[in-house]
Amino acid sequence: MTTTTVSPASPSPGELRRRRGLRGLRVLGQGPLFTAGVVVLAVLVLIAVLAPVLAPYDPDVLDLSASLRGTSADHLLGTDQSGRDILSRLIHGARTGLLGPLLVVGVSTLLGTLVGLVAAWRGGWADALLSRSMDLAFAIPGLLLAILLVAVLGSGMTAPVIAMAVAYTPYVGRLVRGIARQEKARAYIESYRVQGWSGWTICLRHLLPNIAPTVFAQSAMNFGYVLMDLAALSFLGFGVQPPTADWGAMINEGQSAIQQGAMLPALAPSACIVLAVVAFGIVGEGLADRIAKRER
Image 1: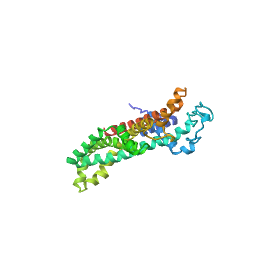
Image 2 (image 1 turned 45 degrees about the horizontal axis):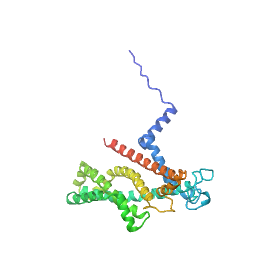
Image 3 (image 1 turned 90 degrees about the vertical axis):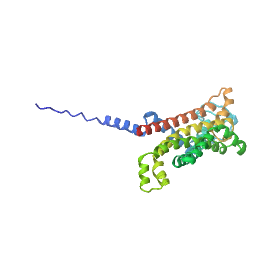
Image 4 (image 1 turned 60 degrees about the vertical axis):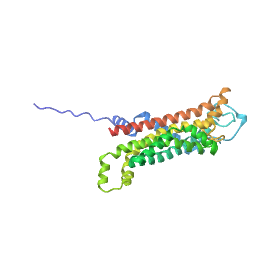
């Protein structure tokens, strides 16, 4: 008896395109939500870089005759109490809104990675000393430290950035210490030692690249938290000072406009902060999930 094997029908060109698209989403991240987060962050970065080109008006020019005007063809989001174009201030505010967190995350990730690696690799008294130092730093609230530094250095971006960098370094350090200790126990580390490689060569050339994706994912989530903290400090008057466009400061300035029935001066920058924080959270969580699945 002869059996006939029926081969499956070849997928249509449309089905092939659909499969490639879905595969692209899976490669990029966890799906459409992750992709949307990446797109939002890319757009925010592009806006910050091209702010002078994209903004229709000078964000600091006052026009009291145009105070609290509603949305129109000339002012798509209206104007604030001083007659400044809200859209232009939002666009320029993306620069200060992203630059501060970038500095904080960069410094805290560098210092935290260094501290965590030393603690995990050296062990013993070095691990105990650095771990206790990180515990002590955890006990100091970042916002309180920022206020103290503002009292010493004056208001502006410098004091909050330094304070937040100090506050977030222990989070990175503790994470790096934990995963570096696990990685240090793997067989490939011992094999390099047997071959005569120095400890720090193994650490920097092999251990660090293996833990870098996890650190990067955590840094993406930290970015959103730092952005929110710095915006809160600007809202309280300890961060970026007027007339510089900053989302947190814009919310503060827009409070009085709410009493006059104008919501956009405070609502628009609030929406930008929420959008950025959520996007960074989605991207960070998506990267962390991908790393966790890869390690299973």
